[in-house]
Length: 191
Image (tube, rainbow, N blue to C red; front, side, top):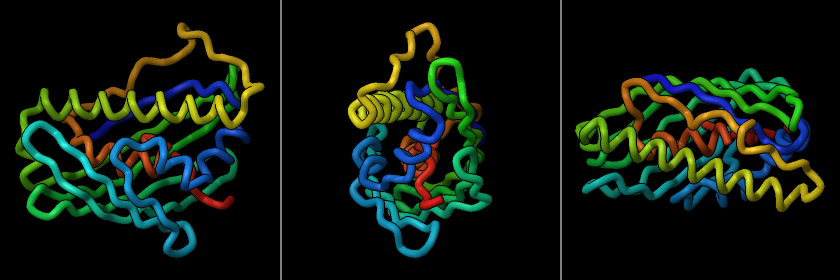
């Protein structure tokens, strides 16, 4: 499964990088995130509780960062287990670039999922993934505005469309990606 997207943030590239280096901020922005802890350099233990339709589960896993180029890019590897509900693993590439009204966060994700959660209907999975992504970006934008109150507001017309998925992606996988990317989307390293 593949997903890509971008989002304009109303802060500088450096401010976005710094905010995405804050595990507590990411934990607060990711729906259902219960744990986001550094376990070794560039590796985080993650736990999220997610419900999609009739399937509710707690997923635990690991997020590993590599190819780190502060303050502009990195790659994310993730692996999560949810017992009988399923599993997921994959990778994402994240980039930050200056933009006229702040900076642009762009990402591409490739993932593989299995188990009960992968058997849910495509429309249900796609709807849940879109909802989680929007919730994450709303929370992250609010946290950025609170942290950097002097940042210029991004006009609604400048905000790119929501992430687009092909092949669908379970919400819990989005949560793992969101932790890493913050994603989708998501730069949590001490660079």
